[in-house]
Amino acid sequence: MSSIRRTLEGSVRRDIALTCLAVLFIGLSYGAIAVASGLPLWLPMVQSVFVVAGASEFLFIGIVAAGGNPLAAALAGLLVNARHLPYGLALPPDVTGRGWRRIFGTHLMNDETVVFTLAQPDYPRKRAAYSLCGLGVLVAWSGGATGGALIGSVVRDTNAFGLDAMFPAVILALIVPALRDRATLRAAVAGAVIALAAAPFLPAGLPVLLALAAVLLLIREHPAREHPGRERPAP
Amino acid sequence: MKDTTLVVAGMATLAAGTYAIRFAGPALRTRITFPPRAEKLLEAAAVILLAALVATTALTEGHRFSGLARPVGVLVGGVLAWRKAPFLVVVLAAAASTAVLRLLGVP
Image 1 (tube, each protein chain N blue to C red):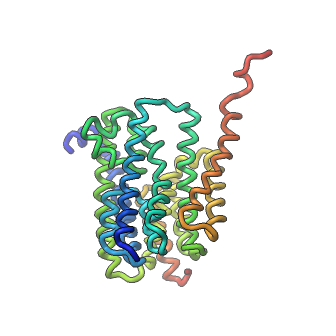
Image 2 (cartoon, rainbow over the protein chains, first blue to last red):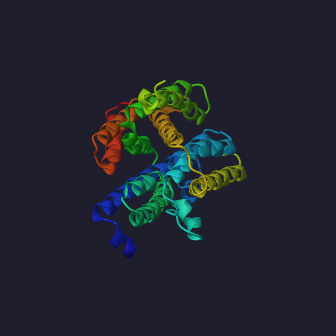
Image 3 (cartoon, rainbow over the protein chains, first blue to last red):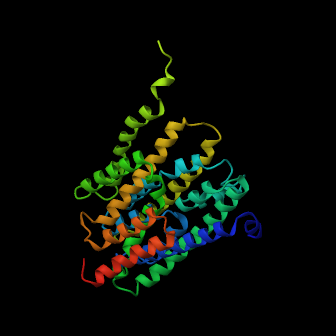
């Protein structure tokens, strides 16, 4: 930790701490919602430690609490978590750790950590940001989920505190920088519309996957922008 | 919850599979290089998935409309995020707006 203090600037450490605090609040809502929808106390506690991927965990408990098959819920969660593959490809090599350290370091990869790591200007700072944010999110998420599960077993109506609005708000906040690109925004809106249109009819998880059809908008669009006519030799 | 064994199996599948996906990226990175366009599309696909997740979790409850309070709260958070408000402010404002609307009787 002392080496992290020397490597990372104060403002970065503060931003990471605030992010972890937000994750703690979402963890609270996750644990509370899980217990309020009739699932046992241990479920959000155990899952938050071993999965550490909020979106997929919310989806999992949503499907299971609605009476869906847990294995189908796991597959839906894995599809949501498939984005960690491009994350891993986007990170600099070895930032998740070398040798045996990678076994644990791999577990620290998540949306927030990837955002902070990629924003750092050099390799030592990327390493430090990855470790600090990764560990912070792991502790905040599982601690929040445990606290939330305990609160949820006491408080009846967690919706009264608006906790259910936190998760979509967090994800939205995380993708806002990417949405500033016009083409991505258009495709994301199209994907959201597709998912909403399908939601009344399809089982949970599938509408979100159907939204991937919106990628087609980008496949058609990108070549036109990336290969201007002048690159082609004149006949 | 009907069957604890099945739920544990589901959790284990999700945990192990997620770990494998996390491990695969850095492992592949050293071996193959994706063309920049494929990388861009992978990134955009992740954003599209997340946007759809935001829309469905904000607006639906099961197969029905969730009521106005939650999507309005999320919208407040979205506007703040667009205007570059700090992460924590975004999240707390979303929850607070939803809570206040419900207090006023909006479903």
